[in-house]
Image (cartoon, rainbow, N blue to C red; front, side, top):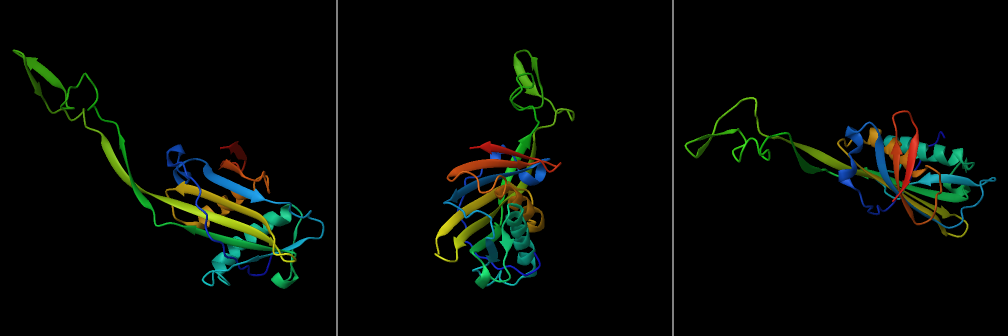
Length: 219
């Protein structure tokens, strides 16, 4: 694909299980994928064009890069990019984004709940029935860390240019410790197009491993 691509897509919320692991801090990328489809035309001479309804994205270099990734995936299954949207059999609407993030707190280690170290969390002793605490530098309390979790998503809609019929809707969403779209969008695109077009109405967890392999798990 060589031409700039234009898209727009209203984001649809997907449930994200933050407790299942964060994409950017794990050795693999995890995304929740939901897809709905009618009968997509067989890729026998069918053409497509990736477009944007959002004027802020239309014509942008960054958007063009990500739209090209979507087009590459469609070409892999046999569709052909049209010279222009007016010449395409299918109009592919593409959108992407990442939120502003939410703070999370994680507590690790510590002795506060250890019965051998008493309610003071620093050890205990007894003298004439009197319990007392003492300070031991080796028995430090729990470590508390805060970090930001970002939720990113992409959305793809495919319409027939001949009838205006909606042929496909797909969303991919992930929670991560990074808000870098250059890292997130390629992984989300790979996840969304795993086993494309998939089973309509099915929600999946797609894991992309470091070696490029994908694991597909039905929710």
